[in-house]
Image 1 (tube, rainbow, N blue to C red):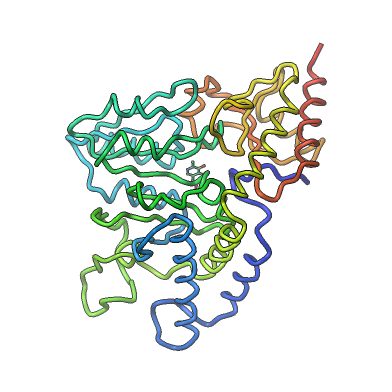
Image 2 (image 1 turned 120 degrees about the vertical axis):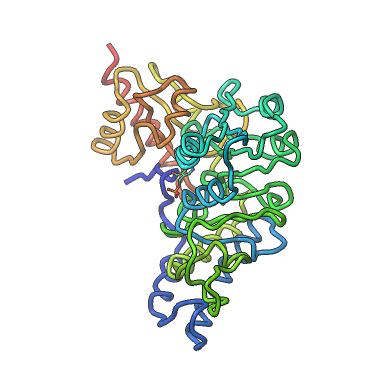
Length: 381
Ligand SMILES: Cc1ncc(COP(=O)(O)O)c(C=O)c1O
Protein backbone atom coordinates (compact mmCIF):
# COMPACT_ATOMS: atom_id res chain seq x y z
CA UNK A 1 0.00 0.00 0.00
CA UNK A 2 1.16 3.52 -0.79
CA UNK A 3 -0.69 6.04 1.35
CA UNK A 4 -1.11 9.40 -0.37
CA UNK A 5 -4.19 10.62 1.48
CA UNK A 6 -2.54 12.59 4.28
CA UNK A 7 -4.82 15.54 3.55
CA UNK A 8 -7.69 13.44 4.89
CA UNK A 9 -5.75 12.12 7.88
CA UNK A 10 -2.06 11.45 8.36
CA UNK A 11 -0.66 7.93 8.28
CA UNK A 12 1.40 6.47 9.79
CA UNK A 13 1.54 8.22 13.14
CA UNK A 14 4.91 8.54 14.88
CA UNK A 15 5.54 5.50 17.11
CA UNK A 16 5.04 7.43 20.37
CA UNK A 17 1.45 8.32 19.51
CA UNK A 18 -0.07 4.85 19.84
CA UNK A 19 1.91 4.20 23.02
CA UNK A 20 0.68 7.47 24.57
CA UNK A 21 -2.95 6.62 23.75
CA UNK A 22 -2.57 3.15 25.26
CA UNK A 23 -0.95 4.55 28.42
CA UNK A 24 -3.81 7.03 28.84
CA UNK A 25 -6.37 4.26 28.30
CA UNK A 26 -4.73 2.25 31.06
CA UNK A 27 -5.06 5.08 33.60
CA UNK A 28 -8.17 5.27 35.85
CA UNK A 29 -8.65 9.01 35.51
CA UNK A 30 -10.66 11.95 34.26
CA UNK A 31 -8.58 15.14 34.07
CA UNK A 32 -9.53 18.30 35.95
CA UNK A 33 -12.19 16.54 38.02
CA UNK A 34 -11.12 14.29 40.91
CA UNK A 35 -8.07 15.14 43.01
CA UNK A 36 -6.47 11.68 43.16
CA UNK A 37 -3.08 10.97 41.71
CA UNK A 38 -4.15 9.38 38.40
CA UNK A 39 -6.55 12.29 37.75
CA UNK A 40 -3.77 14.80 38.38
CA UNK A 41 -1.52 12.80 36.05
CA UNK A 42 -4.22 12.94 33.35
CA UNK A 43 -4.39 16.73 33.76
CA UNK A 44 -0.64 16.87 33.26
CA UNK A 45 -0.98 14.92 30.00
CA UNK A 46 -3.42 17.54 28.73
CA UNK A 47 -1.10 20.27 29.91
CA UNK A 48 1.66 18.66 27.84
CA UNK A 49 -0.52 18.82 24.75
CA UNK A 50 -1.35 22.49 25.44
CA UNK A 51 2.32 23.32 25.99
CA UNK A 52 3.42 21.58 22.80
CA UNK A 53 0.81 23.41 20.71
CA UNK A 54 1.69 26.72 22.36
CA UNK A 55 5.28 26.18 21.19
CA UNK A 56 4.13 25.20 17.72
CA UNK A 57 2.06 28.38 17.30
CA UNK A 58 4.32 30.70 19.33
CA UNK A 59 1.71 31.48 21.99
CA UNK A 60 2.76 33.32 25.10
CA UNK A 61 -0.20 32.16 27.18
CA UNK A 62 -1.31 28.60 26.56
CA UNK A 63 -4.45 28.97 28.70
CA UNK A 64 -6.17 30.55 25.70
CA UNK A 65 -5.71 27.34 23.72
CA UNK A 66 -8.87 25.23 23.95
CA UNK A 67 -9.39 21.63 22.94
CA UNK A 68 -12.34 20.12 21.12
CA UNK A 69 -13.00 17.20 18.79
CA UNK A 70 -11.67 18.65 15.52
CA UNK A 71 -11.16 21.81 13.50
CA UNK A 72 -14.78 21.75 12.32
CA UNK A 73 -15.87 22.19 15.93
CA UNK A 74 -13.24 24.90 16.43
CA UNK A 75 -14.34 26.87 13.35
CA UNK A 76 -17.99 26.59 14.40
CA UNK A 77 -17.11 27.68 17.94
CA UNK A 78 -15.40 30.77 16.51
CA UNK A 79 -17.99 31.62 13.87
CA UNK A 80 -20.99 31.22 16.14
CA UNK A 81 -19.23 32.53 19.24
CA UNK A 82 -18.42 35.99 17.88
CA UNK A 83 -22.10 36.97 17.93
CA UNK A 84 -22.22 37.98 14.28
CA UNK A 85 -25.56 39.14 12.92
CA UNK A 86 -27.37 41.53 10.62
CA UNK A 87 -25.24 44.54 9.78
CA UNK A 88 -22.01 42.54 10.00
CA UNK A 89 -19.87 41.94 6.93
CA UNK A 90 -17.58 38.89 6.78
CA UNK A 91 -14.96 38.21 4.14
CA UNK A 92 -13.74 34.73 3.39
CA UNK A 93 -11.37 33.19 0.91
CA UNK A 94 -12.80 31.27 -2.02
CA UNK A 95 -10.71 28.15 -1.43
CA UNK A 96 -12.60 27.38 1.77
CA UNK A 97 -13.55 23.97 3.08
CA UNK A 98 -17.20 23.30 3.95
CA UNK A 99 -16.20 23.51 7.60
CA UNK A 100 -16.17 27.30 7.20
CA UNK A 101 -18.44 27.65 4.15
CA UNK A 102 -21.39 25.86 5.75
CA UNK A 103 -21.33 27.77 9.05
CA UNK A 104 -20.94 30.99 7.04
CA UNK A 105 -23.89 30.03 4.85
CA UNK A 106 -25.95 29.41 7.98
CA UNK A 107 -24.92 32.77 9.45
CA UNK A 108 -25.94 34.40 6.18
CA UNK A 109 -29.30 32.63 5.93
CA UNK A 110 -30.30 32.59 9.59
CA UNK A 111 -28.60 35.65 11.11
CA UNK A 112 -28.46 38.00 8.13
CA UNK A 113 -24.65 38.20 8.05
CA UNK A 114 -23.33 39.69 4.81
CA UNK A 115 -20.82 37.03 3.71
CA UNK A 116 -18.61 38.01 0.78
CA UNK A 117 -16.25 35.59 -0.93
CA UNK A 118 -12.93 37.00 -2.14
CA UNK A 119 -12.10 35.54 -5.56
CA UNK A 120 -8.70 34.04 -6.32
CA UNK A 121 -6.21 35.52 -8.75
CA UNK A 122 -4.58 32.73 -10.77
CA UNK A 123 -5.82 30.20 -8.21
CA UNK A 124 -4.36 32.06 -5.21
CA UNK A 125 -5.62 34.35 -2.49
CA UNK A 126 -4.15 37.85 -2.82
CA UNK A 127 -3.90 40.38 0.04
CA UNK A 128 -4.91 43.26 -2.26
CA UNK A 129 -8.25 41.57 -3.01
CA UNK A 130 -9.02 41.48 0.72
CA UNK A 131 -7.96 45.09 1.18
CA UNK A 132 -10.21 46.20 -1.69
CA UNK A 133 -13.27 44.59 -0.11
CA UNK A 134 -12.79 45.81 3.47
CA UNK A 135 -15.69 47.94 4.73
CA UNK A 136 -16.34 49.81 7.95
CA UNK A 137 -18.75 47.02 8.97
CA UNK A 138 -16.30 44.16 8.22
CA UNK A 139 -16.18 42.19 11.46
CA UNK A 140 -14.14 39.13 10.46
CA UNK A 141 -11.92 37.61 7.79
CA UNK A 142 -11.98 33.82 7.46
CA UNK A 143 -9.13 32.12 5.63
CA UNK A 144 -8.19 28.57 4.75
CA UNK A 145 -4.42 28.69 5.15
CA UNK A 146 -3.80 26.09 2.43
CA UNK A 147 -6.26 24.68 -0.04
CA UNK A 148 -7.02 21.05 0.71
CA UNK A 149 -7.58 20.65 -3.05
CA UNK A 150 -4.94 22.56 -5.00
CA UNK A 151 -2.36 22.84 -2.24
CA UNK A 152 -2.05 26.62 -2.80
CA UNK A 153 -0.74 28.29 0.36
CA UNK A 154 -2.43 31.59 1.25
CA UNK A 155 -0.24 34.52 2.33
CA UNK A 156 -2.01 34.64 5.69
CA UNK A 157 0.34 37.04 7.44
CA UNK A 158 0.27 39.51 4.53
CA UNK A 159 -3.52 39.31 4.49
CA UNK A 160 -3.60 40.07 8.22
CA UNK A 161 -1.36 43.06 7.58
CA UNK A 162 -3.80 44.55 5.07
CA UNK A 163 -6.93 43.92 7.16
CA UNK A 164 -5.41 45.61 10.22
CA UNK A 165 -7.62 45.39 13.31
CA UNK A 166 -10.28 43.17 11.70
CA UNK A 167 -9.90 39.73 13.31
CA UNK A 168 -8.47 36.92 11.18
CA UNK A 169 -9.80 33.40 11.74
CA UNK A 170 -7.26 31.01 10.25
CA UNK A 171 -8.10 27.41 9.37
CA UNK A 172 -4.77 25.62 9.75
CA UNK A 173 -6.14 22.15 8.98
CA UNK A 174 -3.73 21.68 6.07
CA UNK A 175 -0.76 23.59 7.46
CA UNK A 176 -0.34 23.02 11.21
CA UNK A 177 2.65 20.73 11.60
CA UNK A 178 3.83 21.01 8.01
CA UNK A 179 4.24 24.78 7.56
CA UNK A 180 6.18 26.82 10.15
CA UNK A 181 3.67 28.80 12.24
CA UNK A 182 5.87 29.54 15.23
CA UNK A 183 5.11 33.26 14.93
CA UNK A 184 1.35 32.90 14.35
CA UNK A 185 0.51 33.91 17.91
CA UNK A 186 1.96 37.35 17.18
CA UNK A 187 -0.30 38.14 14.19
CA UNK A 188 -3.32 35.80 14.00
CA UNK A 189 -6.48 36.42 16.02
CA UNK A 190 -8.04 32.95 16.10
CA UNK A 191 -6.16 29.82 15.09
CA UNK A 192 -8.20 26.69 14.47
CA UNK A 193 -6.43 23.33 14.20
CA UNK A 194 -7.17 19.66 13.83
CA UNK A 195 -5.06 17.03 15.56
CA UNK A 196 -5.15 14.13 13.12
CA UNK A 197 -3.53 15.61 10.00
CA UNK A 198 -0.12 17.34 10.07
CA UNK A 199 -0.05 17.32 13.86
CA UNK A 200 0.17 13.51 13.57
CA UNK A 201 -2.24 12.79 16.43
CA UNK A 202 -5.40 10.68 16.65
CA UNK A 203 -8.78 11.61 15.21
CA UNK A 204 -11.16 13.23 17.66
CA UNK A 205 -8.67 15.94 18.61
CA UNK A 206 -8.44 19.59 17.63
CA UNK A 207 -9.11 23.01 18.99
CA UNK A 208 -8.55 26.72 18.75
CA UNK A 209 -6.52 29.55 20.18
CA UNK A 210 -8.13 32.93 20.75
CA UNK A 211 -5.96 36.00 21.19
CA UNK A 212 -6.29 38.09 24.34
CA UNK A 213 -9.03 40.70 23.99
CA UNK A 214 -11.34 38.51 21.88
CA UNK A 215 -14.04 36.47 23.54
CA UNK A 216 -16.33 33.79 22.19
CA UNK A 217 -19.75 32.76 23.47
CA UNK A 218 -19.37 29.01 24.11
CA UNK A 219 -21.14 26.57 21.80
CA UNK A 220 -21.81 24.31 24.79
CA UNK A 221 -21.86 24.89 28.54
CA UNK A 222 -21.82 22.35 31.34
CA UNK A 223 -19.36 20.59 33.59
CA UNK A 224 -15.91 22.12 33.57
CA UNK A 225 -14.39 20.91 36.82
CA UNK A 226 -14.17 24.56 37.89
CA UNK A 227 -16.62 26.91 39.71
CA UNK A 228 -18.82 23.90 40.48
CA UNK A 229 -20.77 25.91 43.07
CA UNK A 230 -22.18 28.13 40.32
CA UNK A 231 -24.89 27.45 37.75
CA UNK A 232 -23.17 29.98 35.51
CA UNK A 233 -20.55 28.53 33.15
CA UNK A 234 -16.99 29.84 33.70
CA UNK A 235 -16.09 32.77 31.46
CA UNK A 236 -12.33 32.18 31.57
CA UNK A 237 -10.35 30.15 29.05
CA UNK A 238 -9.78 27.36 28.45
CA UNK A 239 -12.69 26.22 30.67
CA UNK A 240 -15.22 28.48 28.92
CA UNK A 241 -14.85 26.56 25.65
CA UNK A 242 -14.11 23.12 27.11
CA UNK A 243 -17.42 22.00 28.63
CA UNK A 244 -17.53 18.26 29.29
CA UNK A 245 -14.86 15.67 29.88
CA UNK A 246 -11.83 16.06 27.64
CA UNK A 247 -10.71 13.40 25.18
CA UNK A 248 -7.77 12.49 27.42
CA UNK A 249 -6.79 9.45 25.38
CA UNK A 250 -6.75 11.38 22.12
CA UNK A 251 -4.98 14.37 23.65
CA UNK A 252 -2.27 12.10 25.06
CA UNK A 253 -1.66 10.94 21.49
CA UNK A 254 -1.82 14.50 20.20
CA UNK A 255 0.82 15.62 22.70
CA UNK A 256 3.12 12.87 21.38
CA UNK A 257 2.35 13.81 17.76
CA UNK A 258 3.06 17.51 18.26
CA UNK A 259 6.20 16.75 20.27
CA UNK A 260 7.41 14.66 17.33
CA UNK A 261 6.71 17.58 14.98
CA UNK A 262 8.60 19.95 17.28
CA UNK A 263 11.59 17.62 17.57
CA UNK A 264 11.73 17.12 13.80
CA UNK A 265 11.04 20.79 13.09
CA UNK A 266 8.26 22.18 10.91
CA UNK A 267 10.89 23.64 8.57
CA UNK A 268 12.47 20.21 8.05
CA UNK A 269 9.05 18.60 7.53
CA UNK A 270 8.12 21.27 5.01
CA UNK A 271 11.42 20.91 3.13
CA UNK A 272 11.00 17.16 2.91
CA UNK A 273 7.36 17.31 1.81
CA UNK A 274 8.09 19.98 -0.79
CA UNK A 275 11.05 18.01 -2.15
CA UNK A 276 8.76 14.98 -2.63
CA UNK A 277 6.06 17.18 -4.17
CA UNK A 278 8.62 18.68 -6.57
CA UNK A 279 9.74 15.18 -7.55
CA UNK A 280 6.10 14.17 -8.18
CA UNK A 281 5.31 17.28 -10.24
CA UNK A 282 8.44 16.79 -12.35
CA UNK A 283 7.68 13.12 -12.89
CA UNK A 284 4.09 13.68 -14.05
CA UNK A 285 4.71 16.92 -15.95
CA UNK A 286 4.77 15.38 -19.45
CA UNK A 287 1.92 12.85 -19.06
CA UNK A 288 -0.48 13.37 -21.96
CA UNK A 289 -3.98 14.41 -20.92
CA UNK A 290 -3.00 15.33 -17.36
CA UNK A 291 -4.62 18.49 -15.96
CA UNK A 292 -3.05 19.88 -12.80
CA UNK A 293 -5.27 22.03 -10.56
CA UNK A 294 -2.75 23.83 -8.35
CA UNK A 295 0.60 25.56 -8.67
CA UNK A 296 3.03 23.72 -10.93
CA UNK A 297 6.80 23.54 -10.37
CA UNK A 298 8.16 26.95 -9.39
CA UNK A 299 4.69 28.54 -9.45
CA UNK A 300 4.59 29.78 -5.89
CA UNK A 301 3.84 28.75 -2.37
CA UNK A 302 2.12 25.44 -1.86
CA UNK A 303 1.79 22.49 0.46
CA UNK A 304 2.27 18.83 -0.42
CA UNK A 305 -1.18 18.34 -1.92
CA UNK A 306 -1.54 17.80 -5.65
CA UNK A 307 -4.91 17.51 -7.38
CA UNK A 308 -5.29 16.47 -10.99
CA UNK A 309 -7.45 14.89 -13.63
CA UNK A 310 -6.54 12.55 -16.45
CA UNK A 311 -8.30 12.72 -19.82
CA UNK A 312 -10.75 9.88 -20.27
CA UNK A 313 -11.05 9.16 -16.56
CA UNK A 314 -13.61 10.34 -14.04
CA UNK A 315 -11.96 11.24 -10.75
CA UNK A 316 -13.68 8.37 -8.94
CA UNK A 317 -12.68 5.77 -11.56
CA UNK A 318 -9.11 7.02 -11.56
CA UNK A 319 -8.82 6.81 -7.77
CA UNK A 320 -10.38 3.34 -7.83
CA UNK A 321 -7.92 2.16 -10.50
CA UNK A 322 -4.98 3.61 -8.56
CA UNK A 323 -6.04 1.57 -5.54
CA UNK A 324 -7.10 -1.61 -7.35
CA UNK A 325 -4.20 -1.89 -9.81
CA UNK A 326 -1.40 -0.09 -7.98
CA UNK A 327 -2.23 -0.12 -4.26
CA UNK A 328 -2.16 3.68 -4.15
CA UNK A 329 -4.60 5.41 -1.81
CA UNK A 330 -5.77 8.89 -2.87
CA UNK A 331 -9.04 10.81 -2.63
CA UNK A 332 -11.42 11.56 -5.49
CA UNK A 333 -14.35 13.96 -5.81
CA UNK A 334 -14.95 17.38 -4.30
CA UNK A 335 -12.94 17.06 -1.06
CA UNK A 336 -15.67 18.86 0.97
CA UNK A 337 -14.66 21.98 -0.94
CA UNK A 338 -17.21 22.74 -3.70
CA UNK A 339 -16.26 26.45 -3.69
CA UNK A 340 -12.68 25.55 -4.53
CA UNK A 341 -13.67 23.22 -7.34
CA UNK A 342 -15.97 25.91 -8.72
CA UNK A 343 -13.05 28.35 -8.74
CA UNK A 344 -10.77 25.82 -10.40
CA UNK A 345 -13.33 24.75 -13.02
CA UNK A 346 -13.62 21.16 -11.79
CA UNK A 347 -17.13 21.27 -10.32
CA UNK A 348 -19.00 18.90 -10.06
CA UNK A 349 -16.68 16.13 -11.30
CA UNK A 350 -13.89 16.98 -8.90
CA UNK A 351 -10.37 15.65 -9.17
CA UNK A 352 -8.01 13.09 -7.69
CA UNK A 353 -5.96 14.37 -4.79
CA UNK A 354 -2.52 13.04 -3.90
CA UNK A 355 -1.58 14.37 -0.46
CA UNK A 356 1.87 13.57 0.80
CA UNK A 357 3.07 13.30 4.37
CA UNK A 358 6.35 13.32 6.25
CA UNK A 359 6.68 9.53 6.10
CA UNK A 360 6.38 9.12 2.35
CA UNK A 361 9.56 8.38 0.43
CA UNK A 362 10.96 8.88 -3.05
CA UNK A 363 10.22 5.32 -4.18
CA UNK A 364 6.52 5.79 -3.38
CA UNK A 365 6.39 9.04 -5.32
CA UNK A 366 8.11 7.50 -8.34
CA UNK A 367 5.67 4.55 -8.18
CA UNK A 368 2.66 6.92 -8.03
CA UNK A 369 3.92 8.85 -11.07
CA UNK A 370 4.53 5.59 -12.96
CA UNK A 371 1.01 4.39 -12.11
CA UNK A 372 -0.50 7.60 -13.45
CA UNK A 373 1.49 7.25 -16.67
CA UNK A 374 0.26 3.67 -17.09
CA UNK A 375 -3.36 4.67 -16.50
CA UNK A 376 -3.06 7.60 -18.89
CA UNK A 377 -1.70 5.19 -21.51
CA UNK A 378 -4.77 2.95 -21.13
CA UNK A 379 -7.02 5.77 -22.40
CA UNK A 380 -4.67 7.15 -25.06
CA UNK A 381 -5.45 6.37 -28.68
C1 LIG B 1 -8.94 23.01 4.99
C2 LIG B 1 -9.72 22.10 5.88
N1 LIG B 1 -10.52 22.63 6.82
C3 LIG B 1 -11.22 21.85 7.65
C4 LIG B 1 -11.18 20.48 7.58
C5 LIG B 1 -12.00 19.67 8.52
O1 LIG B 1 -11.20 18.87 9.34
P1 LIG B 1 -11.87 17.99 10.49
O2 LIG B 1 -12.75 17.01 9.77
O3 LIG B 1 -10.72 17.36 11.17
O4 LIG B 1 -12.67 18.89 11.34
C6 LIG B 1 -10.35 19.88 6.62
C7 LIG B 1 -10.25 18.42 6.52
O5 LIG B 1 -10.74 17.69 5.81
C8 LIG B 1 -9.62 20.72 5.75
O6 LIG B 1 -8.83 20.19 4.81
